[in-house]
Amino acid sequence: MSEMTDCRGFGLLNQYMERASNYREFRPSRDLAPYLVCLWSQTIHSRMEFAQRVLPDGCVDVLLMNEIPIVIGPWTRPFIANLAPGTNILGARICPGLASSLLGIPASELLNQSVPLGDVWGSSGTSEFERIVDQRTVQARMSAMEALLLMRGETAHPVDLAVSAAVQWIARHPHGRVEQLSQWLGISSRQIQRRFTIAVGFGPKLFQSVLRFQRLLHLASNEGAQGNLARFALDADYSDQAHMSREVKRFSGEGPSALLQTSRSTLALSGLVRPERSFRPAG
Image (cartoon, rainbow, N blue to C red; front, side, top):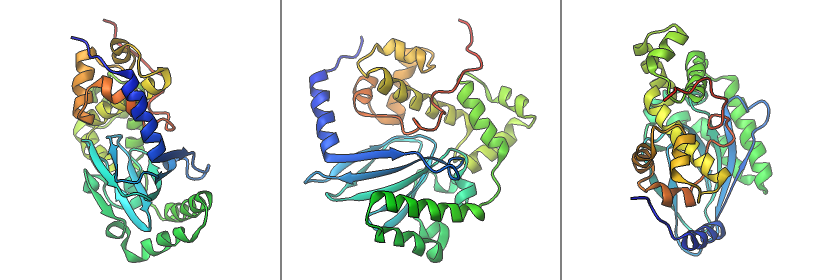
């Protein structure tokens, strides 16, 4: 049985969410573009607590929530962040596979966790971050955040270039197997699994599923969330609509009809959800 939705109800819900929460994304500077998907800001305007749903995207976010610096690790399941009225957030979304270099710890240590930035960089590394709030405008705060991240980038750990290449390969080969990736990179599947987990937080197969999920969100936002679900499943590289429904439930806790009306991809500026494909199996 196909899913049915009350589109009028979802329209009203979207209007409420847009009034209650002002969320915006910004492209990073050229120097930070290799590291970041985007910079972003969010302000809660509602008079009551706002329930912000966070969905898996393979990224790690460094953010200032009001005056508190926090690291949001890579998540493999959805969670709800309950934000108080007046909350102001400024964030930097680190590209999949690069957080371990910029932060100096394995991404796997942050898996499914939100931790104070001080636990990662220590008090000396976060004191300058806290001074970002002295800036009066969002643009000035973003410039200050970029300056601090650039400074950290100068002493960053070396990037695992094999993992970075693997992330791009998976984006271009949505039906590819780890064995094929191993052959392409010239390293063993076991080594890929180990290095991928350190850099991304989890293995390449799960990352492939997360990326497919984010591709679906991107397609729905571009083509209209009221589109045909079977077509969305095909275009997002699911094997069929039932496969899409299972994965959407896994990563969001909802069915596709409900999710696609209210959620957008957090990887839209990365290129990972809209790459040129190298192949698509016949069938």
